[in-house]
Every structure is written in structure tokens, then in C-alpha cells.
Amino acid sequence: QVQLVESGGGLVQAGGSLRLSCSASGSIFSIIGMGWYRQAPGKELELVATVTSGGTTNYADSVKGRFTISRDNAKNTVYLQMNSLKPEDTASYYCTVVYTNTERYWGQGTQVTVSS
Image (cartoon, rainbow, N blue to C red; front, side, top):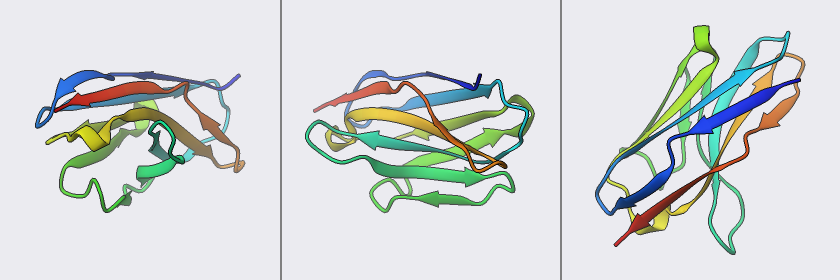
């Protein structure tokens, strides 16, 4: 059974930093992509950042230059370093993983709250 375990959310003041992590386990298939999405109250789920197994990254325009996604392939873990946080970054952040069998899994979500 595939399991994604997220950690690192919390409350921070505007301008501060947080680091999210997500570890995947339980699949016999290899991971081809990992990423983070977020959903603020009353808004749709939106992509934050993704990274492929080869290291290619993609960011939402709203976080470019502030957030950095990285992954440790040996640990099946993806990280999201978030700097210069803004109140509009407040949301539930969800980790997602795609395996070579094309199946996608989601984490349980971790709350990030940025106070002004």
C-alpha cells in the first residue's frame, strides 16, 4: 500500500521560511515525478512545483524565485523550501507522486499559515 507522509507545515510570519517534506513508500514501481499542490479556502487546487526523476523542475509563477523544490531519489522524498512567505501563500499543501505505472497518489496535506 502506497503511503505518503508529509511534514513541515506550520505558522510563520510574512517574510519567513518553512520547509515541507514528503516521503513515499509502499510501491514496487519507480517514481517518475513528485510535486506539491496547494488549496486555499474557497479556491481551487493549484500547482505549486513539480520535479521529475531527472531533476527537471516546474514552478507556478506566483512562487518562482521564492520556493525551491528538490528530491532525494534514494529516499523517495521530495522537499519544498519556501522563503519570503506571503499571507497569500496560506493554504493546505499536498504532496503528489506519480509512478511508472502512471498511478498518482496524494498526501494527507499539511497546513501552512502565513500571518501578516
